[in-house]
Amino acid sequence: MQDIQGLQDGDDNMGSVLSVRFAPESGVTHLNDVASGLLAVDCLRNDSVAAQLYRLRFTADTGELKITGSVGENGPEWKVEISVLVPKDYEYMMPALGLMDGNKFFVFTQSYNKKTWLHGYINVHDEKYCMTFNSDFTTGVQRAGRNGFLLKFSYVATKRPRTVTYEYLGY
Image 1 (cartoon, rainbow, N blue to C red):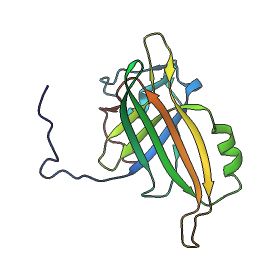
Image 2 (tube, rainbow, N blue to C red):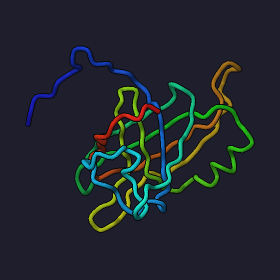
Image 3 (tube, one colour):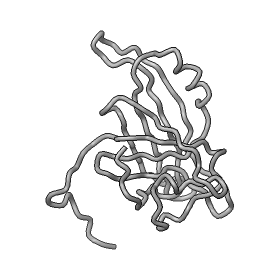
């Protein structure tokens, strides 16, 4: 046990998610050791090469990473949810989202506090625990309100989610 410190002098405490990148579960065969010194995006591997990552572009200040801890039947667990708003009902969005809905992904988020989080893991039995994607659409309530797609990744983790100790990528 140790003391839990509050905000340190000179540290920022910015909210929201800066960026989201994701890789399909099927495109990841293993994870590199987090202490390997590689960039965060090189952590996900497909055999001997880096796994293909996709970028999710969204409206600034609509990204949220929420981690809620609880005790389940098998001990501690954490519900992890990432949500972002992609504006407008562009024609190309429906088929693209249709391919993703209900599928599983490894996901990286970066916060404005320059922390990179990896969501998803592979256990010692090579079982993958990944986030499930789904999407909703809203027109908004008022004419000046935000309209678009609310995109969500979520899963229940049996390991405490963690930041990865790689250099900040600034994207």
